[in-house]
Image (tube, rainbow, N blue to C red):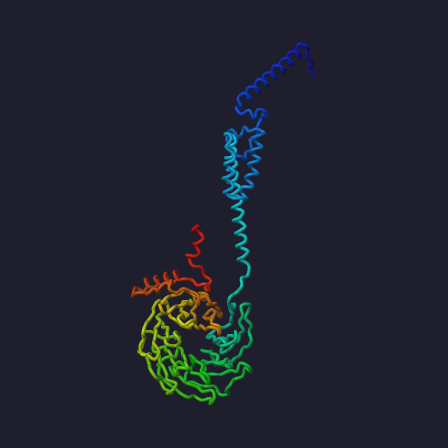
Length: 489
């Protein structure tokens, strides 16, 4: 320990007094530099908040300024809740002096940041809500797909009930009950040695007609599941198509032979060989006493049921005619070709078409009328399309089969609001088409007619045309225009 003399102690006390006097003089100078008398009692040292962005005057604020800032924070909280109109009105209240204006500007910056934070939070909540809604199971408007072990060859809806029959390549017939919740397998029968080419429910729904590759037509009772006739109805060649009658049916085979059958007598009433190739489809109208068939050689043929004889045959077209349907109360016959062209024939005038509608990118394999002016087509590219005939408009794509596998058969249920289709993807797919009754067909585009081009250019044009086709609600795909619509705002 070092001892100090009295003289040294006196000098230290004098130095302390002089330092205190100099500090008091500095404090007086700082107070004199402050213009605002309201902040005269400010502390000697001010600590700046690193998260606050204000003016230089705000950095040297006083207790009153801090009170104003507290009021601004309360106002900003209320402004976020009240909206932008209230923010403007609150800003007009603070215009007394420069310091308060600067503090308001800082408060506005904080308000903007709070608004941005709240907006981001709300956007995050909306995103989470959208993801949750996407995971939730939505109410179905049509039955789910039926997965099959073997490739289906044909389908047929019951004329009154929600039941569908499905045939396959193994000669088996499967019966399913359909609902929007689930499909249930009801029965499975082995009927033919080879594959079943065509099936149809009878007009009253009490029997199922099957046409097989084993050259026979069989009739099954849907109550007992027994064959109606012990001896099957035979053809000279494997069967290809069927059409039911009230007391019989009409069948066609691979070699172009068409036979009329009467189930009451269990005999053949007419045999007609009018084609050189397979009979692709048959339509029968007992009220008008006419039967019409299409063929792989590119012709259609009609039969007069009153006279029980062939009637009119068309000229030969460039490609096979695969399917047909009727519209306009049976006064128009629509035929689909392998070139993607639809030919329109007037009733009783089957020698040559009255109109033709090109535009399909590939072969039309199946067709069914769903309204008096709209048909659904199933194409080789795996797409189902809705086509309005008068005027001619491609309404859009109804649905698709996986892997662009060809659509082979289409049928519509008893209510007319659901169609089913089969292709090569081992699935029976269902599509709700109830919206077709409410559409404005005048606004739909005309078909794209492909002119004669080089093969590569034509294929490219067809691919572009498919990309621009309108997607209907049942297709499950989003149109480009609708997808980017949300980014316009």
